[in-house]
Image (cartoon, rainbow, N blue to C red; front, side, top):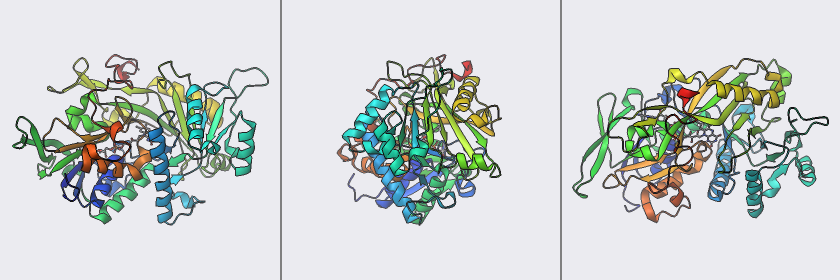
Length: 481
Ligand SMILES: Cc1cc2nc3c(=O)[nH]c(=O)nc-3n(C[C@H](O)[C@H](O)[C@H](O)COP(=O)(O)OP(=O)(O)OC[C@H]3O[C@@H](n4cnc5c(N)ncnc54)[C@H](O)[C@@H]3O)c2cc1C
């Protein structure tokens, strides 16, 4: 398609992927309508709105550029980091303040705590890549005296915290750790609400609630490509049909249910979230766990397997302005296998993993609770034995290789279906830049110049990894947890 051809585009999903692409397409002159069954115009993406089953609707998510050997994601994260800073500055927030907790990106640092007193393999790879990209001086390893000195000089040393390894003899050993001063967190829900406003200002249209709940795609035989179907629009729960030149599926962990052709490429799995609530009256805790004094902490609870698979990460983010200290466990991302509808192109024993209904997402599996409690006893000792304020399963859209899926679907004629999904647990940080790269692919297909083109392409040739190979009855099956 020539860049000058404006298309009418229907985007399914007003999460981070849908919003980011909608704004970028609108900037390029396309007519864009976004459909979402959640009433974000009323809830403002408030994470307390109980029914919002969307990964993007959350207090905060980690922003980091440390990506091991995946230099393309490191590059994209650094690009996005710049964009977050520019965005906060456009919103009138200076570089050095988090006035009233209003920043979208808080550059409070992230401490990558290792499984033992030494730096693990992935950590060494990350540091080597940062060295190569001339950003090694932004990282501070607790075992490196030079790094400690630099951290002191630059005001980061307070966040280079040494945590004792339980059960080690006097003098106790401490975990190896690297403080990443480029990292921090993004206020995810606030960022979505802001992008929604930007989209509205630019003329993107939105349909929410029953008018936005997509029940099916509308298809017809293509005259231009005989033998293939073409999607001409979508049908919403209120019974209306909306026509579009291209339908974009950006429905996060529900994408396979709208477009079963994604069933080979994606799988929904649950991360476990728990919070403690700190009252401003608890002054010591309020100060200690504030973004000014406490970094994001991630801990690889067990050594990585030989395959490089991440077997046990738990993390905590500094308290929010409302006092929530959020802990996430992704050592096991739980799958929920259910019978797949007839005709689903790819199934495992006739099943696929899809999100549980909202009402069943409030309690965490015992193994997650156990892991989080172990983490709390080491890293948040004041909260040992304190009941959680909230718990929630939050659904990932895992792709077969952990990279996003952003491309036209070749099964459909005339570029009528585009997918923008597969966030795989690391998509939130890219909100300000993802849409531009995706819009390049939308407009130019194989001629797109974005360096992410190859990684995000429709890739039926790639074997199913990233846990998607396990299937029902596997170690992550929630029915066995
Ligand atoms: C537990 C957890 C922790 C994470 N941590 C991080 C992190 O630290 N850093 C990071 O960068 N990323 C993180 N991520 C990943 C990030 O949150 C996701 O990549 C991103 O939010 C995905 O956005 P999305 O728009 O694809 O999906 P979603 O946010 O799920 O949005 C999809 C939208 O589609 C709508 N929808 C679904 N079906 C329909 C339908 N039939 N009709 C209409 N609308 C529909 C939904 O209502 C929803 O609004 C994490 C994810 C999880 C689950």
